[in-house]
Amino acid sequence: MAEEWKFDVPTAGTKHLPPDPRYLEALSSQGYGFEAAVADLVDNSIDAGAGDVVIHFLRDSDRLTSLLLIDNGSGMTEDELDVAMTVGGRRNYRQGALGMFGTGLKSASLSHAAAVTVVSRTKTSRPAGRRWVMEHAKDGFQCDIVEPGYAQSLIDRYSGGQPIDWNGTVVRWDGVKDFPRNGGPEQTERYLARTVSKLGMHLGLQLHRFLARGDFNITIAVEDIATGVVVMNYGVLPVDPFGYPVTGNPEYPRTFKVEVPSVGVVPLHSHIWPPKSTVTQFRGIGSLLDTQGFYLYRNDRLVQAGGWNNFRQPEQHLALARVAVELPPVSGDVFRLTVKKDGVDISPEFIAALENAADDRGRTFGGYLTAADSTYREARRRTGVERRPVIPAGKGMDPAVREVLSEELPTLPGEDPIAIRWEAIEGEAFFELDREGRRILLNQRYRPAVLGGRRAGANDAPMIKSMLYLMVNEVFQRERIGPRDKDNLQLWQSVLVAAARAEMDRLSDRDGE
Image 1 (cartoon, rainbow, N blue to C red):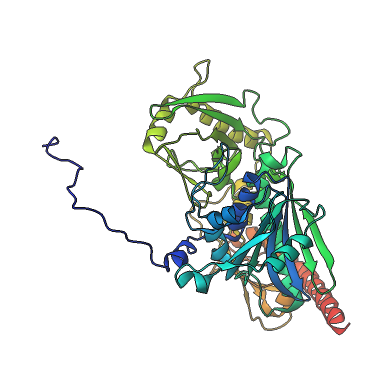
Image 2 (image 1 turned 30 degrees about the vertical axis):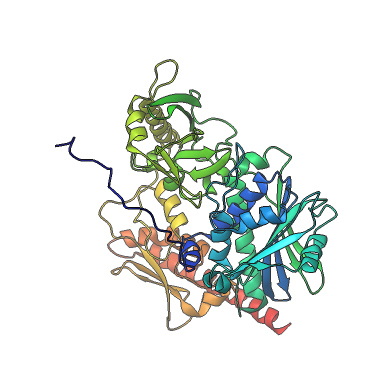
């Protein structure tokens, strides 16, 4: 029966079926995050041999107008620029290039902007530019030719080593969807502070090997175009996910080898972080449940930061385990990189081979996982202090805080979590306890003072919520509130109300200036 089944289907010729112009709209709806989209542009700069990349936010007073990425790479001629702006345009990627599919520039840009302009110059060619506007793109793939005088002026704006010297490329996003619209100066400042921090962390992690070499730099800058003043200038630092000062286990790091029939030997460089590390490379890149596991590199670019890819489920006791894997040059169907380069699909062939992975002395990968688990558990026992269990935190507490609480404190089994929320409360009290409903209620009138002008949200005010949760947890555990508890609650109320009023006075004074 198996021999009768064939994949050869008889055909009667071919027919040319070009994509509908709306295909570009679909291509720009792949779920690119803002940081991942910018990282894709930086990849192109690296492929062009750039040593300096500037990510430039332009603002006109309170309003953000454009985002530009400027590099001092080799640049492109007009013909090369046409290929780069063609969806799926074919070019020969050099060995070690980060680009793959010929779609990143277009899909990443039009996912976040209404228009993308690319202007470039080589050492032997004049500046040339092309511009995709989504509306034109949907109307028959009509790509605009940038007027040569403007192309020259845009190159000139960043010439003289800032960073372009003789050659380079400028990518400009207009109509950026993520930019705040009508929030005024405070919203713009908050957006920039948040976005620059997240973008710097993302690029610092994904491209940490390039940034650590010393001959490649990324700068994030903000310029007020009305005054020409650069109001922010931030150098991106490498964030090495394996950059611990001292190993958590003296037997590691250790390299295990996986025999995968279709691609050969794949080394697993396996590390155990020191317990309770507070450095950014450990706690600053995400949840410890998400950042344990495999760190997959392609041509020195980190394309997946953590995760076990169906090998096993993440668990708290493996929080210290991180494994660096270099994707082989020819991966076949074993490692399939996503178009956005933010994850890798790994075939069952590799997962099955992990069971037999071993180092040169015959020690197994399974033994490594056991060692990582034991290192975590032993660190908890060595403290010599047994912390009292608590009722877990629930809705209203920032997830990152909840994770640390679950790591640091044992929880009482079978207990409903304590939720924290803002509500209208009569009188001057800062908070009320709903012991039966397992809720800490914060007085809505003090919310602006606590947030200090920041945006409200379900998980806002993490510091005040964490403090209150720790202070009143035992009150929720008791059958009744005794005199000592009542006195403590009154003390905390008085201090918090005084602090909130002081903050309200500060806000009032600031608004009156």
